[in-house]
Structures are given as structure tokens and as C-alpha cells.
Length: 534
Picture 1 (cartoon, rainbow, N blue to C red):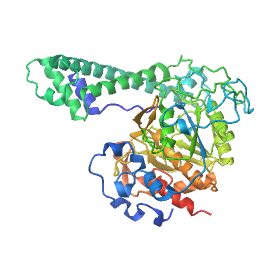
Picture 2: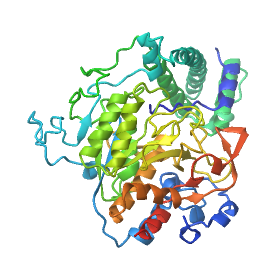
Picture 3: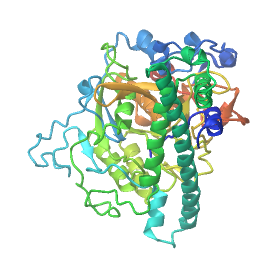
Picture 4: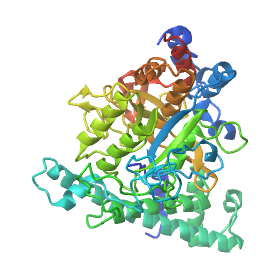
């Protein structure tokens, strides 16, 4: 699942509840021996840096990006690469977006809209990919499906029931809290708007109010508290409203045991029942922007004067819609991976995941199928702040610690500020089951209808690495998928200092203990390393 809820700052919550009415060193751009003496960036990121921080260079910019711009300036500039098909298994892609429309894959063996399976691959009119969800949007979490099935013989049933009770209590409490906060903020905004006879009042104007009216005094206090956290009252209203939408979706759909979300007519427990869904790879709602954002991180058209630059040029994006507003089905994911492989993808990005997987073997076999067919599979490590060596996160490429694929890369997320808080507090980690870290918060990319926005999550870190994989496959096409993975992992920048884990200042670990490599992925280093492999 791609869900990553971000609550508003605790200081605001507490105040409003009280006030309210209820590789080798020579190829490293930053040498290993110097990395921890790199000066910290003490100034705020400029707007340009914010929109491109994942492409910047740690040594030159003191921002922990992947040196993508440096790679283009010094390595790629005068080279011609090959086209690489990258499959994006996600919530669908806005294939008409101004920054993506020229990099969308087209199935040349299929004749558009004739109702026939021209290429005999089992999918009718799959022009730009396939939609395994049909018209499905809202879905349950996987452990809720388990409870709804009533299968008490399942070895994880009791665990699922316990988790459900805890999660429902958490989200009901969060809804109550947000409802109270929304009421307090809306009341304050209404009073201040009436006082000024306008809606666009400023913090300075609020601070200048002199009044003995207790209600207005309270509104001033609320406004000042919110302003002290760097946002306006009007912006807080938007954040709270968006938070309530997420909370209500969690309760009404993801945690709803009675929901019947799936709209395809297939047998979900029969992997051989294929051909369901349709060829419409676009999202079904404007809110379903996750896949479009991921696609832009990989391959938004570079230097066209619009929006954002993707990591990779020479890419064709294959759109595969398999991730709903809830947990994905193992069957859809397994078939999506096989579809991507069979139709020419050389890199697959999977920015989704869950902690229960009833048919994990189907997905694991598909990951092995990708490896056997020389395809790199890049997967988001997850957003639960947990050690996935100890707690499962699916899909995974291992059985009891034994890996079935040598082309699977699991990616954790970084914040844009180098230092002890470089690891995103939501990011999963694991010395064995996370391979590398990459920029994954406040990432600026494409969203629906020719718009752009910032999003955060390991969902954003994975496509950054998928972009590096695509670059290597484009400019060094003789390298195998296994060699591409090896290059990415070995050429990253090592960090040997201690960092805060899970946003908990008392939980401090060596960065090198959080992943297999202890490194940040780096495009510049990876291309140099790739050039040295015969």
C-alpha cells in the first residue's frame, strides 16, 4: 500500500486541544574518509533546490542527493544511449501529462481499440500497459481481508485481529482529535476574517490586534501558535482538511471489514485466471496521483522548461495499474511483474507494500522470473519506521533469509538535510532486507492534469534508484541486471556516522547498520563504476 499519513505538528495539536472548543574511493564524488566531515548546510533550501534536491551533489551542494545533475554534466552529456523500457507498477499514470506524454511506452504489436488481442499475450488492447484493477479504487488492507474471510485456521489470524483492534482504536482517536482541531481552527479563522472583513489577513495584522474579547483573544492565540510552526492559519486549514480525508478513508475503506472493493470478475485465488481488467492505464480519480508522481521521478522529460526533470532519459514508461487505495492483491502484483517482463521491460519499479501476503509465493516466483529474464526489480522498503529484518514487508525476494533473486533492490528513504536526521523518520530499514537509501521526502514531481507537487515516502526513493538502473541499462547495455544491481550498491556513498532512526531522538544507530550497504545511491558514481565493468 502506498499510504503515508503525516500528522500535523504535535505542538499545534496540544495547543489547539487546550485552546479549542473541543565500490573504490577514486570514483566517489565525496571520498569515504571525508564524508563525515562534510560541512552541514546551515541555510534553508532555495525553491530551486527544494524542487531538485534529489539530483544534487553532497560535496558541492551539502545536500544528500544522488549527483544526477553532475552525471549529466560530466558523463552523459556527449553520449547516446539506448531506449530502456521501465515498468511502473502502481496506481496508473496520467499518460497525457505534459512532462510524460513523450516518454510513454506503446505496444507496437497491438492495434488500438479493435477489441482484439493482436499480439496474443492474453490482454486485449494493451496499448500502453495494463490495468489489473479495472474500475476498482478503494480497497481493504490485507489483514482486514483475512479477518473478513473468517478463516480462524490461518496462522496469522489472531495477529490480524489484534492489529485491527489497535489500528481502529488509533484511527478513531485520531479522527476525534482532528475533528476538534478542525473546529478550533475554523472558528478562529472565521472570527479573524470577520474582524478584518477579509480572508487573506496576515500574521502581522493578527499580532497587532488589541482586544478584550475573549473569543477573539483565543483566535489570536491559535493563529500565533500555528504561525510559530511556520504555516499560516489558512494553510493549517488545508492540512487539517487533507488529514481528515486520509483518516476517513482509512476508517471507511481500508479498515472496513464489510467493504467489497474489487470490481473485476476474476477468481482472486486463481493465478491462471488472467485477462481481467482493461487497457485504460490512467488513474480513475484525480486523487490517485501516486503512480504519476513515481513516473515523473523516473523519467519526466528533461530540460523541456516544464515542471520537473526525471532521473533517466532514453526511457519508455510502461504503465501497469495494480495498486488501489488500500492494499494490493498478490495476484495482481505477480501478474503485473510477469506482464512487464514478457513485454520488454528491463527495469520494474514497485512503490507499494504490505505486512500480510496470503500468496507471497506467487509474487516471489514473479520476482525470480524477472531475475531469470535479466530484469531489475526496484522496491520501496516501506513507511512503517520498522526493522524489516524482524517484521515482514511484502513483496520480498527471500524465503527464510535465502534470496531467490540477484536483481531485486530494496530502497529506504532520506530527508534532504545531511546530518544526524538524514534518515526519514517513516522509512523502514534492515541490515539484511534493505539494500540502499535514496532521496525520499519532499520530492517534487508530476501529478495529474499537468500539475506538480511534492510527496514523501520510500515510494519516492525507489523510483530514484530505478532511474539510476535505467541510466546504466541505457548507456552500458551489455551489463546484466545482476551487474546493474551490483554497480548501484557498490558505488553508493558510505556514511559511517550515527543517525536518528524512526524520528526517535533516543534511537540512534550507525547508518551502516540500517541497510546491507550502509550507502546512499549515487548516479554519478554508478555510471563511472559501470564503465569499468568489462
